[in-house]
Length: 103
Image (cartoon, rainbow, N blue to C red; front, side, top):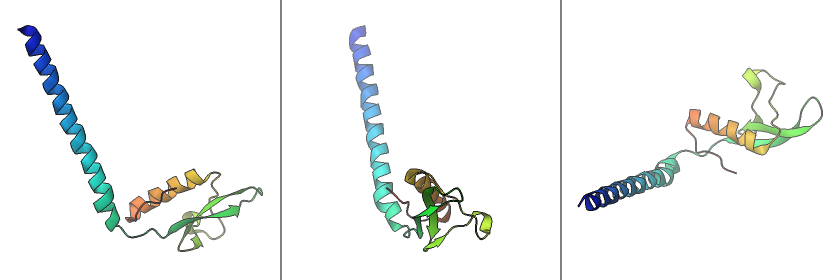
């Protein structure tokens, strides 16, 4: 009798976890398809530039213009990899409410 109670308890717990996981996955899918589709397109982009030392990297642009550090003219950040530049762009897009850029 105790074996039956233990098995039924385990089966009930597994069923509850399965239902919970299905709800979480469907909520994430709904958010991605419906909520994020209504966001405006991002004005941010990436261009390939050269830094002061002479090596090439990626620079963030907004509406085709380079985004300067602290608003100062002439100083802009050059990222060594495309993925790090996209990560920084995603931070800016989340702050301003734009659709996130993906690689």
